[in-house]
Amino acid sequence: MVLFSSMLQASPGVALVQVQQAQVQVFRTSTDLFIHRGEGGHAELAAKVQADLGKLRESLATLQAQAQSDSARLAMEQLQAPLAAFTALVEQTLAYKPGEPDLPWEFNFQYSKAQRELIAALESIEQQLLKGLAQPLSAADQRLQSLPAKVQYLAARYTARAYVGDIETLPEQQQHYLNQDIDVLAKQVEAELLSLNGELADEPARQRLQRASTRWKFIYPRLLDYSENLVPLVIERHAAELAGQLQRLHAQ
View (cartoon, helix red, strand yellow):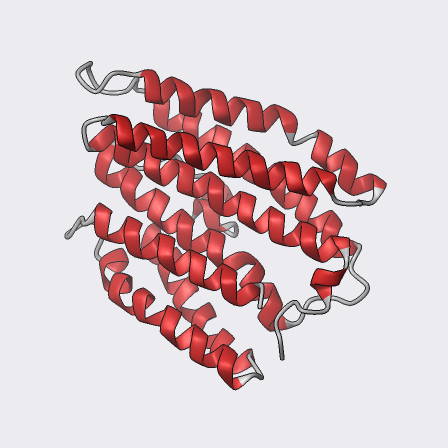
């Protein structure tokens, strides 16, 4: 099986890849923003956050250019407000000088809300695109569509906890990964990676997954014990690479 090879010929499949990339970039922006705040606000770290925002905009521009259904276009229009709110909050946080007192007490609530609403808007587009597919995704493709964002979100939550305090979650919506504790989500990702290995019919794809899983095995114990052993830069580096490896596997 060559993952997504047939879907990539159709605009819904290409658009799904861009939605996935946008979700990952939202969380990568968050991860790098928290590191910028916690590691002294150096100019190169700020530039990295700005580059993340640029990649997010690029993914959304590519998505906008794809032929879409009326419902997908409507969902795309509804994305603009949460995107603007998220971008503005990121840039405001970059401008908050490291030498000043801690971030305002309401920051974690505001940031969580902005991030959550942007992801919800992206998921709305994703659902409309999934409805437009000629055939539903296989179990493996479904996992590969969602896993990169979950992995990068773990890094965002972890670095937030290390540098600015854990961002707000909604206990009444724990069925969504955004609201799960770090260790709970880490166990879910672990289970999904194990299931994915059995769902891939192609041996080369399984081998690529095994190579990607090496990084996961390295950071998994640290995610489970995040309260005892905070290593945010290690988590950031390996989670970003793992998310990228899963994205490349998804696009094969």
